[in-house]
Length: 439
Ligand code: 9WN
Image 1 (tube, protein in one colour):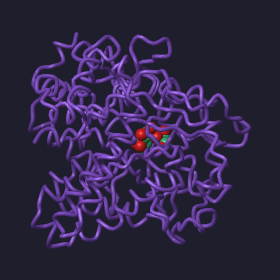
Image 2 (tube, helix red, strand yellow):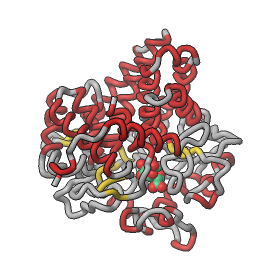
Image 3 (cartoon, helix red, strand yellow):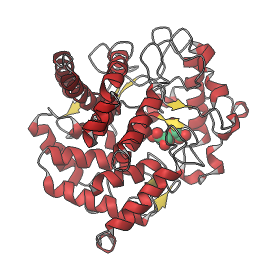
Image 4 (tube, protein in one colour):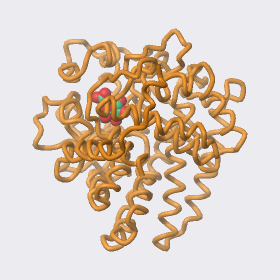
């Protein structure tokens, strides 16, 4: 039962082992999510990692973000993977030979020297940069951290608000299931079903060498991921030219953009730049998020499929993450807290927050983003609950987080009913965010 798992985690040993995970996954300029399964730098992983690393070494946390930003494209996009040149191409699929960023991304301003993917991940970076600065403002000022990252972060947000506003309603769209970071969520099933799978013999998965097939997306999912990515690549990663067959307004992606836009305003204020446009954009995007994605009957945010124009009916953890939006109307925050405690997410009755509706037929407690509980989403929801005065729920989630991170050896994700580890262990963001919650 859950009560057995909530004995207070021994803080010193947790702090020590979490730090060891991060040091072990540090490559000299950045941190890999996992030495085995993910041997390169991932975009939103690095943001979460920096949030934890700032408690170990503020300077290294700055470096983590700077390394990622040095691979930014000329059009402002931050690629979802920055490849480590000393790791062979066959170590992770799809690797640099698939994305061919330097050639295919040239018109979009991809680096000629640093190999990257061409898609993106959720924009947690400005929030992370602000938190990293706050951990040691003197060291940050000494290194000129904020003045250096500010223009890059601002360009990133301009890309998202410009080329990626595919629906024209003031929200950013994702064009591949890897972009929201919730790869095989049941919410994408209907949209993905319209995609012609790439031929099965045309690619070879490497993830199954490191993780159980029952915990991962299926081969059919991968065949569609490959088709979508190849189509984007073959159109020069140009959002205007690509016939986007998958285009979705995701609540979590946009909520993180808004939280980051507020952080960008804080950064601008600190370095003497104009914060006004950032605050105004954050407010406008909050209105768009509520206007386009809030469902007052279901009391959750639903993603919108831009190909059909319809809301996606599934209840995903993504729909709760707008709790991190600072200016979210109080009535909506209260409704989200009710949903979190209700039968679909079962706060306090299961372990952390399941990635998908516990009561839905598509729920699968083992398979990646189709049900398992993840530590980054729990950290975000904890942060949102605390900001909106839901102290008791926030405290419960924090205690579960620390206990389970320790007990699972920093698992990638958990089966929500048993709390058992799934995916790989010694996963960087689990360790990093545990360090953050320990403070
Ligand atoms: C594809 C690195 C990433 C996370 C994602 C998670 C998973 C990759 C994969 O791993 O995605 O980007 O190979 O499955 O879904 O959220 O950033 O940890």
